[in-house]
Image (spheres, rainbow over the protein chains, first blue to last red):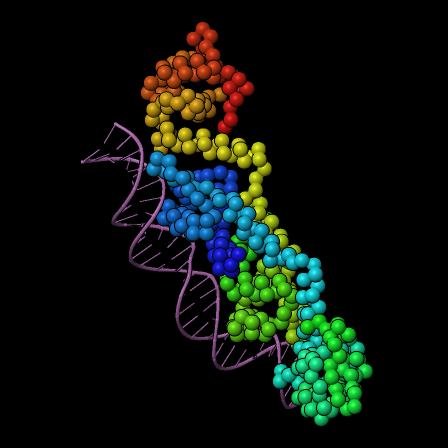
Length: 193
Length: 193
DNA sequence: CGTATAGTTCGATATATATCTAATTAGATG
DNA sequence: CATCTAATTAGATATATATCGAACTATACG
């Protein structure tokens, strides 16, 4: 369901007169003047609202002689009701992932400044790992980095590159061999983002 | 659920920007500037819409530091979705009665003029009975009517009182005894309205 | 064909509101 | 306390729209 249809429908029923018309029609079809009478409004006003209700298929009509009976299109109402319901329902797994992401994003928001630099290293281990993983996202897997090259990269985030580099190693995000650094396979540290 | 709350809610979500905010928050909480960024709007505009969304309890917020995270209030969304669903759902019996009533009303609209007088007697038996029953509603059960009195009553609806009076008898709506007329018990002709 | 009735269209008016820029407030941090 | 960032408020503008009375259209009926 595209956004525009939803917006048009809700905008249309988000009016006291139109919602009262819908409630009336929910009890059975009525002709225009009957609606005008029950609501204390003039026929042109009712025509105006019925026009809008027809635009979103909330009502349909059947002519009988020269009076027109208006009916509530219940299936359309149900349709949008369930579309609305869907906006509040997400499958469990997806929802949990989203929550996790939101939590991580919050930590990142807190510890990185607007220019993208790390303000300071979190004391809490869990948050520290999130911060380290965020920095690691800029490195390519499989690529070999010289120590100087890695230091330069880290310095874009934080002046104390030595601490960060050491954290990379002791938390098993990277390994070092003969002064050459490389990312460990992601599976080893269950990267999420 | 009172009408005003429904109207306010639907009016609120019947706006493209606000519905987009709701869709975003359905995927997880966000802070104001993140919303502004994703939608390409300025923070004051987002504040404006969040204010309206809060008014109808569609969102709530949690402060963390000086950034405020906004959450979709899913239970409220569900609440209004089911209220909307109710507008299209009626229990079967009630619905059938309403349909019957609407059908009868249509016949009455067609055969009685605005001043309440019968234009002519329907040829179709089913419609004729509806018309007769409509006229009978003005009589009291248990009361005994003299012929002249009954004629006068019928004449308020139709000049040819003799025909109508005869129809009352042959369709078993009334019975006559020594020139005195009386309504038959309702059960005998399954009065609906 | 003329008349009556139901519905629609038109034009005017009053009200609401979505959006922006600029200024202000609130909290956190050094 | 000074400063930074996020959010809000205020004011301005442009657009949308709910309602009505008056004029018009369509259908039925005699």
